[in-house]
Image 1: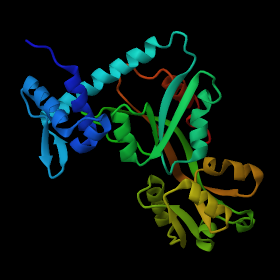
Image 2 (image 1 turned 45 degrees about the vertical axis):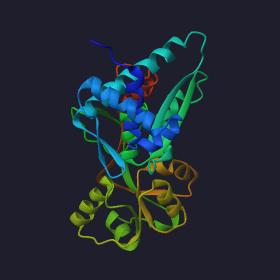
Image 3 (image 1 turned 90 degrees about the horizontal axis):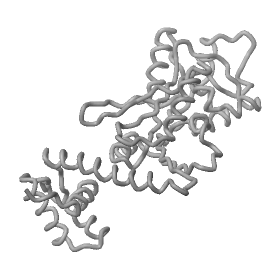
Image 4 (image 1 turned 90 degrees about the vertical axis):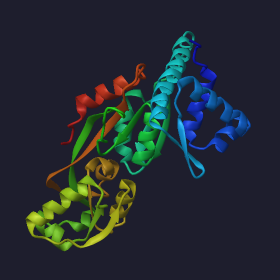
Length: 298
């Protein structure tokens, strides 16, 4: 039996991740016909079609998905081998971290604190949507992803979500919003609120809370970015429904005040990895530190 040609497999993997033969050929400085021949020879060797064409896009067949899973494992193992053997005489190691674009920067800094300032660590930070980040994690282009909701996992995409932090959610606003003896109901009835969007878990908790209280609050803004909620609260646009960690600096400086913790409401944060034969060793100190302090402020 002839052995598998790994050049064919490498070209197949590149096309599978790009989903476009023309783009891959340009990137690899090959002609489309030459690249097509490489894929065809791999399909003949494996005895299965690996792609089906729909318009200008290529989509993996079931056999193609299986082949890509194995190809990713093979080439990531090779990359890990080279990186590991290069460690002799090498003083720095890279870790690639993805974070939801709307996630609290303060939370991210707290999570990264165990490796901040280390002379032996190169941090590569990326932001994006949940689907973009999980796709990059699955393709092994990221080592760990930070989200505020745990992703679905199955036998094909075995994401591992670790609950690393949670904090109460409070009403945050300028000091002038407060009155002595004001209750939660008074605050919500008197002042407009700055809320996360309907897709947020915090928003659904808030809707349940005001329904229990029999209050219909005035909504000043609906925002999907915690940094923007923080800015709106600083400008006095309303009371922001936020975890205090998001405005840690403003609370310490007194420019914003935590008026009331919202009963039963928490924001959770998750660190997501994927099963790897050679996990990045820098992940462990991050997760261990988070496990020790994940309920801080709860």
